[in-house]
Image 1 (tube, rainbow, N blue to C red):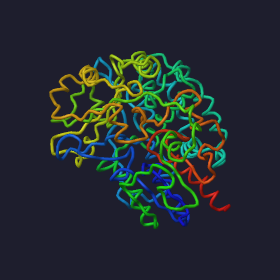
Image 2: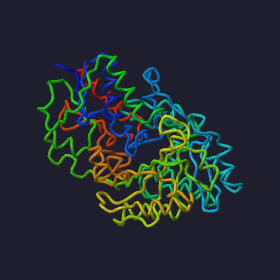
Image 3: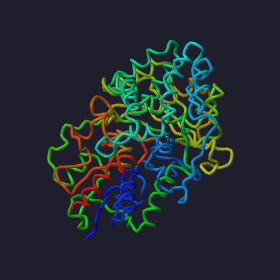
Length: 469
């Protein structure tokens, strides 16, 4: 009998399997797709030689993840690549605010009226970043805070809505960039703890950047899988699990799936009936005949570029997708251009480019024209560079990754109490009604992103049980 079986080979499932195998437990992992990866895969979606990331592309939380940093993933081929700027937020006048590794450079890009406010906001936390991120991404019941004072101060700043935090700034440049950071979790700016979301992304960039993995996001998954195999773990692909009886006998079962899928497979009935899924995304992968013609020079030097003319435009787009049930006319876009630092991603002189906008969950329309009109505002002539595009709405994203229910790449709405308490109100979020069954997906704390910490935290709950039985 195996000690543990893990279902789903996304970053969290892979991390949970690795953590258990590192501690001497026998582990087998089962994945429905033909390759491991979940939200961290790389494929040729458009033309030969153009390697795209169908889901996540840039990884500020990945390089800062306490779980990943504790693993020898570099020995298994993971190499982080950094652009000159981690992120840029261009404006219609051809200038841009930037998120730089340097706090001073970032603050200067906001202008003199907000430079001091920004430095006062982030510098106290940045000095304690390594302990703060570990405390923030763990639960008190899985690891006692190493720096409870800094964590409490962070809570005071981050638990209120981001609109409160934005009052510190006077000008549009800082407000727009910070609102864009919050929008990465597709939550209205007025939501609980959205200030913390923006702070975490900003601090991540200052601490270690917003890199892309050489060769694509698949490199993260392949490194985890390679390490797991060397630890003696087994990886089975093309193996769809429809019920628990499809799996071999084990002392524990760990699911990197949506709560809905877990309830169906394990027969948990309405255990997660109140779990809410959030807005979906509409994503386009491009093969380009050259760099994106950004008007702002800073955007040409950044792997990640946020697109939203101002805070109000970003807020309007978020409300449309999350509360009003409609696609925004001017969507807020998150874009990534990995080939500016990774020549392996496209033929010489060409580029891969990735953009998504927010839409209602399960939306079936086409946002291509609205997204490209938005891009043209900040990069005139963009459409002339397009060689091919691969379009994926909510249905296509859900087909690619079953955890993206209705196109929700966060595996659950990151709004209200559910941003902090997921998948249900419980001090033991990785536990389920069955004592031998656990959940480790992005539906559990600390939530969405390629960081493996949900898998890491869940593995702690699993090995504590295994040592008791």
